[in-house]
Amino acid sequence: AKTMNSVEASFMIGIFVVNTGFGWLISSQYSEFWRFGFLMIALLSVITIFLLSKIEITESKPSGNNNIFSELSGFTTPVVTLFLAVIFFIVFVEQGFNSWLPSFYKNHLKVNSFFALQATSFLSLFSYAGRIVTANIIRRFSLSKYYVTCISLIIALLIIILGIQYFDSEDSRLILFLFPVIGLFLSPLYPVVNSKMITLIDKEKVNLFTSLIVIFSSLGSSVSSIIMAILFGKQLLNFYPLYILCTVILLFVISLMYFNVSKRKYRK
Image (cartoon, rainbow, N blue to C red):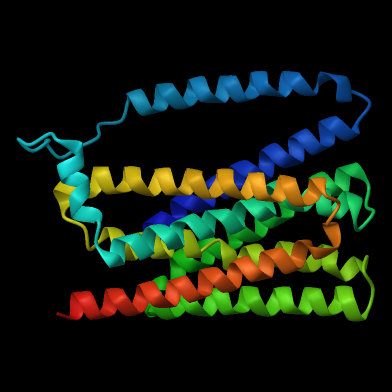
């Protein structure tokens, strides 16, 4: 969990730098040159390929039976199914924030384009802080209890945001600053639950299992984007925090089921 949170923290810094850079470019007098920002991304990709080519990676040798379906059949247990559902909804929630928070800021909270674009930058900055803190303190806590505490705090913050929106002001500026704080507690969920499960998988099957994690993460991201696009297309901006809250509560319930099933299975 410590290592995965450190790695994921660097990922959030990448998001922060890119969002800030593109936000500045699009909001400046040079906005028509935004597409050239991708040339910088291409250059960084080349540098990444070079760095990876110099790294020696030790991989487990494939077993004699290369039938992918027979290997996948070992992952059809209830605990794995619940785990993949947890992964799906964690990424579903993350995508709901990362991709659609700027639209909510601009269209509902009526902020300018630059500040709207920086919404995910500040979210990423808080996510970085959350993962760095988690990497340094996680050994002192039970993974499951730490996870449940984080998701409970997310629900509490979303309830506060809804309270402000419906009982104070729909475009309160306080909401602008509360949403990014959620990243502090949202960011540890993915690395923590992954590390807990991966340690229980046979070393020979870790590569295949991590591929399943990537697949369900991508599905969560895609489905979230589709649903949010439909909701925003129908001008249902007022209910955006409520949709996110309902999804987080569903994630919370599934996570509790996963931890309970996992505890019973591996206690035996």
